[in-house]
Length: 214
Image (cartoon, rainbow, N blue to C red; front, top):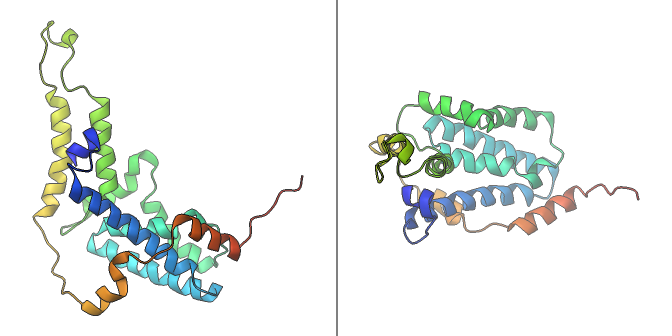
């Protein structure tokens, strides 16, 4: 993760790339399952089922998958459709948790209160690391060091350590889940889904865009 915040080199961070790809696949898998349903009733049925899944992911402290599902249900092609008040109310609580204002204050508070095992949202971890890297020099300016050079900026290193140490703290715990082959087959490794263009096309077929009068 530290390498990625500095260089974004896929060869140096292969596990992170795979992890990020999994996040995206889950999100598109959820969007696809909702959008391909033939009726509004069926779409809402799937939508509410995924809201229940989100609630359980949140209870488990799996915020990375929680965000993957939420990003699907709150994505443009899904959000623009007409949903019942029940659906909107069920989603509202989760959207507030992941509100990006004030540097994701709601999420950070929830994460701080969560007991391990826990899987934080990796996207925000990378964002924090990148912010620290870009916003701080590796070496202290001469003006602060009596004109001496090549003095490491340990303030920057400490910020990076604090972020990574929070992840390491969660890694010492593991989930005690039993493997269920039937469920795994249903997921299909999250590889069967529509691409972005096809999802938008389905969305606009269900609810055509309003054309402005010239």
